[in-house]
Image (cartoon, rainbow, N blue to C red):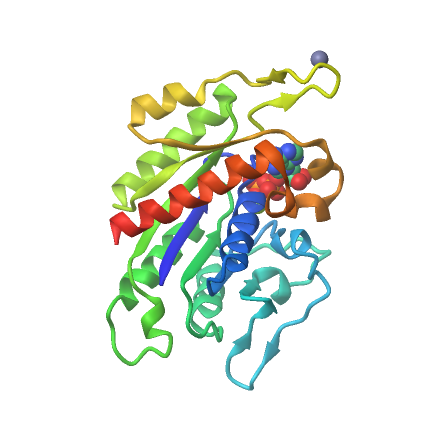
Length: 263
Ligand SMILES: Nc1ncnc2c1ncn2[C@@H]1O[C@H](COP(=O)(O)OP(=O)(O)OP(=O)(O)O)[C@@H](O)[C@H]1O
Ligand SMILES: [Mg+2]
Ligand SMILES: [Zn+2]
């Protein structure tokens, strides 16, 4: 089982969109995939997947994830009142994340994708702690699940203000010794419907950061207005055609190749 963290220093850059589409694509390719949303303050993956009306099911002891084909999905959203904001204090937050990783009936998985809130707060630290404690430990029911985290995909847009924050998360991951698979540039350009030209709305600043940090840019996904307009459209990458589909598949393949090398 290979675990991929989807992270960014910045909010709203498309982490959840990338995490859900990546998980879905891997599952459509015949892999057994787990997807966990640990964004306690603003979980979205259940909405992107269109399963917002699901409830947590248990077998009396463990949580049953929502199954969509080969994809097993669990989110903190199922445990909270979705209309009221929740004020989670540190210890409660970590207990909740711990439960969602360890007390979910994930079964046998090929990939586990974890979608994080922006930044390097409690959530990544908690997940890393759980993984570290469980690596090769016997007696844990999800024992085979807890191998090392194979890597992080960092999502960003090309604005300078985003890239500054992203550099911080890169440094955080380096400090934690988590391999960084690559930079995923989202909303890179907009293809003009009139003349077909590609407009790079935020410039091409990601290349500079890539060079400076020695991390590859593994995807450049355009801004697609339908995605922003309609939340359900957010599964667009797995359904897209032409150039976008090609770029997306290339990115997914790169991630898989890099995981094979690092494991
Ligand atoms: N390539 C894209 N083109 C157009 N809209 C996009 C694209 N990617 C994401 N969006 C839209 O941008 C918004 C933010 O995306 P998303 O929720 O995936 O970001 P996030 O980084 O997970 O945000 P948060 O920090 O709140 O968790 C959403 O409305 C989403 O539908
Ligand atoms: Mg998100
Ligand atoms: Zn034009």
